[in-house]
Length: 388
Image (cartoon, rainbow, N blue to C red; front, side, top):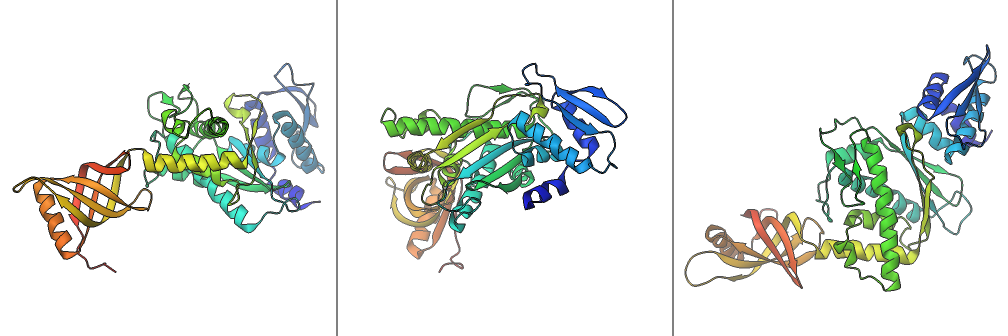
């Protein structure tokens, strides 16, 4: 028995779990006797599929019967047996698989590529979960939503035979109570989701929509019919999602395929979505991510650095300063103009005279090559104790 078959056999669901799954996935009990039960899908175009289960677990061939049933389910749902098992055991899970294409024997990948792809896959889940939870900004705040982080922690990761296949099973339910409103898929297709749609489904739908539409727009940019600014004008994904999609192919942007399959347990039946993202498209997605991060206004950005210029009208009062420092959103040192009230301007003048750093938090606005921090919520001078 192969390692994969041994693993699937060890984690195979029990009879009660299988029966519960069949009923929730649209199968009906067609016949039964003292030894077996016969199941058929309700769908009229199911190609005469059927599967047989024993009526008890304490039979000699129970494991073999379950494995055969899983193969039938995998064929019917166009998923891998491992993905079906996770769906059954988790209690409902959508499946996402990424096939990398390194020039190595099947099942192998360079460590650098595997590391980059796994990190990118997690970043994509967290970013899409943040969007599904209501974060509609093109650039997500540095602090991700706790619900998104918790959901990502519940996802199951595995690898499968092939060029190098990374598989994720995303649970439909995350355990968080839903608000008593209708939820909209933020920043994507005009699709209003009813409360019966579980959070995990909203996440997988967001991931699919972001990947599909970002790929399409990247193709338009590559053809010359769109400019990179289109990613801001028609927001199809946030900057973190774009960066993750560009990083899934690794440092060299190797071509990869991505496949989305929805669990039938939620009442949704549709063909798997499968598409390929080319090296050129990945480079455009990376450029688009950087464009959003550097060109779009953002709220709640903190800049820490030194005051290098001060200016105000005659007499005491408010004034403008220029801070050369690093913001907590990109980690890149730049010059930022800040309007300060009289008291804060006095503090900035003292910091400039003494060579102390300052920190300011507000809304980052970008106009051409100039960056402004407006609507300040805080401004302070650092003591200098932690200066290098």
